[in-house]
Each structure stands twice: as structure tokens, then as C-alpha cells.
Length: 639
Image (cartoon, rainbow, N blue to C red):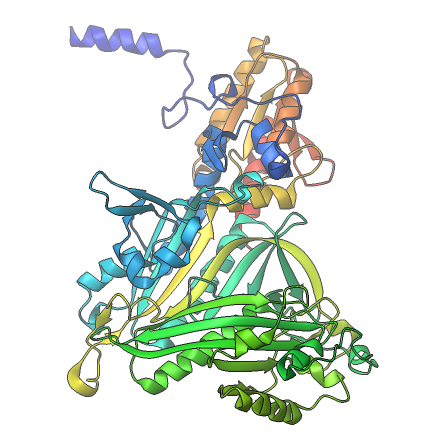
């Protein structure tokens, strides 16, 4: 009975061609891919090429504002990106884990970010009215986990990463996956013994990021960046250049120095240094000396600062200060609020360090006035017996009458009248750099070292955090060498993110053309599409199936580069709509089985190239298999 059953099964299988792995062939006729012939309408906020093309090609569908469902083709692309990231993270010792999407507020309140991030958090409560949030990031959670398990330096270094969904309540979700409220991210968190070993880790991760973007095959730039709300003291951004980007990068063509506009340092060019500066027409005479000092300037900023620090042991307050900050710059130079904020944060941290050991400085910076319309009077603001910090940008040296020593005397006299402490700091860089400034990194300054501005999309960010979170959350270890008092040391941390879903959209923005998306071979949903020109021809269908099996089931290296990377377009309908769909979806290679195949035994291979006519060759079936294997292997090899 058993033999009869086997015999029947064998006869049933005869004539059925299967792939070597006995898996069904990938067929577009069986796939859920709701493409659209018409231009898909998007709201004005989402009117970018990546969003329109992903909708039209059936990669995504919108669920609600800033939240999207990933359909099969879109999900395959995200998984390709995730695989590249996963391999490179593991290559530097990263171990993958999964962290919860719903977090308790307890740790976030302890680090101060529950209030600091405010409306950006999706906050909720459970039935017991406990505060929770949807995870926008996981510094607190991962630090808490490691803190509970870490005891000795022998357990370090630790490198943990995850790839998952994150949530931020964007005020204005826009541009599809470029700025959504739900998104997919990779986060790597590192824990080291010392700032020296943490810096080595930082460099290793930067090397891994370099390989990730080179393997993906998209033009990118690495820029020095501000640490922002995450904290820390070393930070870089990774950008895809695109006209729809919200970031502005300043780059030196000579030495390749690149920095975000908010962080960039530019030297004032010679023609601006020697420019004769006219007196300020807005100057008004007033009885209030402080008002007069403000009115003398076109560019000024008035802000309030509060800072406090608590001890790492008993949580007692060891430092506290409330102060006013008054900043001045050249009339043709905008004041950079982030640079001012960073300077004042470091000033307060230095003051706190003089008072003893502290876990962190809770710091707030609130701009009050930045022009004469906002500004009413300094009297009420500066006469509150608060400390006053005065900052002058070095661009003021362009004024021939400017003297820092004279300003120090004026401020001291004015503040003595109201018995208010004042500190007039040395000249510094408190201005926003701009295109045409000279590169601060080059030793010789000429026209070739003038900074050039480009718009870009931020797709990754690296932070060397130091002890920003480990001190607050008591993540510490017993060191190699005993420390004074026999205590423990806080671990040195780093966090490193890549926006997976944003990167997918950014690749489209960077590489699309008028025909559609142009995917790099490494992350294309499928690397080869076999297009059957006339599915009514049984012979054409048989040839296409045979070609599919040869590509998908080739041994050795081709198994790696083409296994499950081929799809058959066997849909009913005309050749025109199929080839238009193939170009819109952006398969790197399209193999056409048509009349030439039936008459001459040759297939036509089209290679998709951004902004160019597709490169075409005609080859026999065997030649086509060898050609595709070689071309794809070459494209996947990072030069």
C-alpha cells in the first residue's frame, strides 16, 4: 500500500519543474501589489517623490496621519536594509535583542526627558493610572537592563542593538516615510570601561556605518553634528543628499570637511573682514544704560538659563543657578542659538564640577528676545539680581570701534548700579556659518576652501554619550584599578541610530527619475524580474520558468546573489504596462522573454540606471544566466 502511494505521488509530480529548494516560484500574478496607472494624489505635506512612488507602486498604504502599513514589496525592501545593518553590527560584536514598545515613565522622569521631550512623546496610562509611553528611543531602558547585570570591568565591553518600531508625536507629520509618527529604526547601545575605549568603539561603529551605506549604494555624507536632547559630547550625522532634505550641510570642496549648518564653523572671508560697517540706524538714546547697550546692536539675543545639579550618591542639590544671557553679533551674521546653548550648558557643568561630584546638570535655555520688536526693556529682566552672562561673537572685530575690554567695563558699571553679578566672556563663535565662509579645517584659505551648502536628509546619527545616562541610572562597575574610596565607576556609553524606513524613502529621493524608482541591487525588492511578453504562449511561459529555475537554483556564489531574488511577471495584459511597472518599481535587471526568444533563442536584458536609458543586451539563456550572475556579484562588491 505504501509503495502504491509513493508510485502515485511520483507520477503526479512528473513534468512539474520546481526550484532546487522545492519552493514556489515568485510570481507577480500571485502577489498582493496594488500598483496604480494614474498619478497617486498626496497631501501637500506629503508631496515628495518617494511618497508618491511608494503609493503608486503598491509599497505602502496610509493608515492615519504619519502612520503607514508596509505592503509585501515595501516590507521586502526594509528587510533588505535590515539584513545589511544586521550583518555589519554583528561584524563589530553587536548582539541583537528586542526591547519593549511600551515603556514605564519612571526611568524617563529620572533622566528628566519625560518633561523635556514634552508633546513629542506618546503618553498613555494603564487602568491603574500608571504613566506609560510609546518608545521613541531606548537609552533609559537599555541602561537600566545593563545596570542590573553589570558588576565588573570583566563584563565589558557590551554592544547591544535592536531593529524595531519607534513612535514620536510629530506636530506636522509630512513627506511620507521621511517624517512619520511611527517608523523603523536600528539602535546600537555600547558600554565601555573608559572614555578612551568608548572612543575606539565610536570609531569602529563609524567604520561599520561607512560599510553599511557603501553596501546599500546610495551617495551619502558624514557631518559633525549637535548632540541635541540625547546629550553627550561627540556626535555625527549621516545624510543622503537631496533637494527635499530639511538639513543644510556646509562642505569644503578641498578637504571634505562637512558639518550641519547648526554645528559648522566657518571663518569670515577677507572681503567681509575689510568691509566698512555703517553705524546702526536703529540706535536710540535712552536714560536706561542697559537699554542703550541693546539698542546699539541689530543682532542680539536675550535668553534665560536655569541649571541645577544633584549628587550621584544622595541626590542632594550641589549646584543651582538662574541667569540671564545676552549675546551680540555682527549685523550681517545670525546668532546661532544652539552654539549659545551648548556654550552655556558647558559653562554650567564646569561650575557644577567645582562644587563636587554630580550625576548630571538639569539645564533649560529659553530665548526671550532676538530683535527690537520682541525686546521691550532690559531693566525688568536684568535687574532681578540674577547672574548675567554676556557673549560677543568674534565677527564683532569687523567693527573698528569694537573693544571687548571697553564692553567689560560698561557692563560692570551698569550691573554695579543694580548690584547684579556679570560675566563678560571671551570672544567666541556664536554665529551661524554660511555658504562662502572659509573652511576652519584648512590651513590655507582661498576661494577653493569656501564652504558650499547642500540640502540633505538625515538617515543616521551617532552619539558618544559618556556618563550622561549611566550616572543618573547608576550603571556602574568595579574597575581594574581601585578608585579612591573603593567605589565603582560609571560606564561610558554610546548610542547609534539608523532610520531604516527613512533610509528607504531617502534612497528613492536620491536615485529616482521620471520613470520611477531606481533601487540599488543590494536592497531592491527583487534583483531580477523575468517579464513574459505574451503569457498566452505556453512556450514563452515554459522558457521563463526554466530561466527562473536556473537563476534561482544556480550553485556556488549565484545561489547567494540570486536565491529568492528573482520574480516572474506572468500577469495577463499587454507588454507596455508590464515594462512601465518594472521601470516604476525599479528592478535592477529586467529579462524579457518575447518573440526574439521564440525565434532566435535570445532574451533581452535591460539594466535600470537612474536618469539614463536602460542598458540593453541580447543573450542566449545560458549566456544570460552567466551575465546576470557576474553583473550582480560585481554590483554587490563594495569597491
